[in-house]
Image (tube, rainbow, N blue to C red; front, side, top):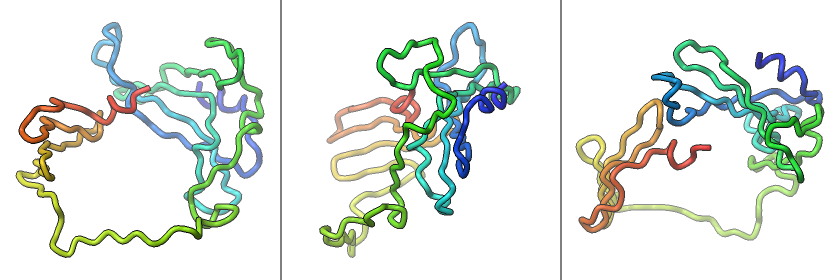
Length: 181
């Protein structure tokens, strides 16, 4: 199903598809205990030969949704491309989907004019050691801040019991909640 949708797009020569898997957030009640992943799809310009070339500049309007347990694609979402008058459920892109995109690189050797020359060096040095401590494997203390830091496969980074000067600020915050679509 995904390969069929991808074949409808016409990528220029020298472009490759990049898929970035993301947890799909909380399951709907009717889905039961199923966990989904969404694949954010981009095209990477490989003509420079640099593996770090920025593929985020070339988003593709396909989002395959995969059942994490069965490893099967359950549907393909086709989001609007952001043009004026885009319908939410209609195909709004041409097959030559990256023609309107512009290169936007971050790697210094790929920048057309190189990096800025007007900045002085920034050197971070802590000759007496760091200002924070990490104890009990996940308790982080820094100045008046105190929090627990954990990671899990579904949500990524999770902050627990975040306190400032003894006052509770957050009970629990996960990276997936901070960036969910």
